Length: 148
Image 1 (cartoon, one colour):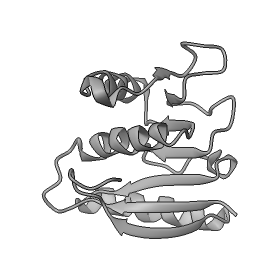
Image 2 (tube, rainbow, N blue to C red; image 1 turned 180 degrees about the horizontal axis):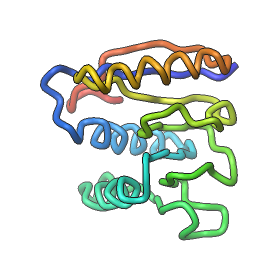
Image 3 (cartoon, helix red, strand yellow; image 1 turned 180 degrees about the vertical axis):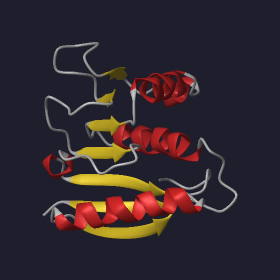
Image 4 (tube, one colour; image 1 turned 135 degrees about the vertical axis):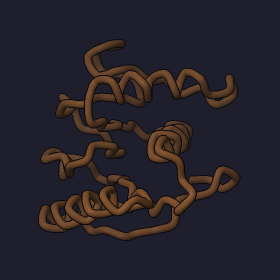
């Protein structure tokens, strides 16, 4: 059974909060030895997320690459806007729609932004995941001082 969690972003969250939290979650998963695929809405968001991961402090280094770049088997963390070629244990979704390939992952993480339009899109993704058989929970987004 695939499992997923929707992180509820706080009302004061900025527009880049999902990307910032995705980097933290990917870093935590990387430290635990899990392979991660971060699904973005488009190439521009993927490249921005790639840059965010490079800007982390040196003690938070995460081996990553954009989809189709880097080693043949991919880095431990891969960022892309198309369906991945190989499965990984964790999917972090930043796209506005639920990706059709979500069931190929053991676990997925998604986000509920504070704005009404973002919440509506999150509801649609929640419904699509549930219809695909993903067991879902919701949780408040971890704060900067908490482990994600």
